[in-house]
Image (cartoon, rainbow, N blue to C red):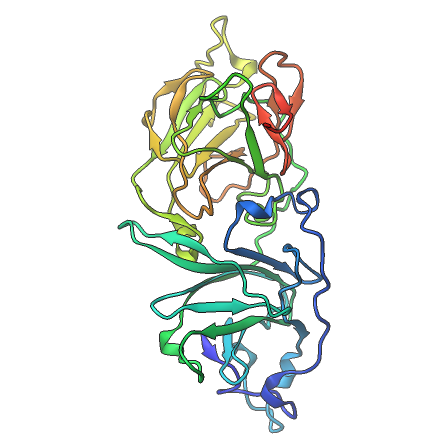
Length: 385
């Protein structure tokens, strides 16, 4: 985090700013974004050209030329430009992408002891959410999720602190993760093996679960490692079911309290990873006794993320429909939900693969959940009354 303009200014332009095109408004329709915005309280998504919120909150998308950051004598280096900068006079927060590739930034501004409010273009405060650390301490914060084009400054919002101006950077608590966008190289990759439903109904027979983010969802499902994931809203403690016969590859439920929208939560979570039996290798009892990553030419792995508890261990065999743990909200999780994803490999950096669920009653019929719709083991269902 740096003070904008303190180290380098564009030649001939005050504070390194110029007029640019403001981001036009866009519908927050979950069918467009494959994400239900209400499932991300305190999270605000922006992509050049649109905003995921009902109001256009981004101040300005400003194209930049790296050459502008050299003096008339040719001195200066665009690499010195920080990822995040604050203009102390205008009290604005800016994401600076001088790279030739798009970047994705997750930025959390904590309210701290002195109330900090982020103000969007319309003058409306951006909704805050909460985050809880591993010790159980909960605080309010706001997280911005920005996909920024190459060589663009995204002037995101104003920063308003309860203390009087000038803005004191020492009192501002900001954490961020800014990376070149790791896009999925094979978005249309699809695995032929279908799977059962991963959640058990615990209330009435007609219950179901809201899909809050589908494949390619704009909250977190637009990277190589989670492009095809599906999120289901579910109460903490909902039983998790093995979606097929298989073997437990990993089981981790060490975190207890960590939850919410802080950027630091992106790097810690609880999960279970299963390697599913191949239907082509199954014996008369339905068990694939050759189940291994090397023997199966088309393996399928599935992962249950943000879980609260696990009742299986690495190496355990599981049967379809068996309870293997309970859901939670551990990690980067605006609300309690299950993040379910499939892979062709157990490598931690493996890209996701597309998949479909089969219906419990008629397994030859399949479905792929989309955000804003309700589902159970028999596919899409009407929303509960």
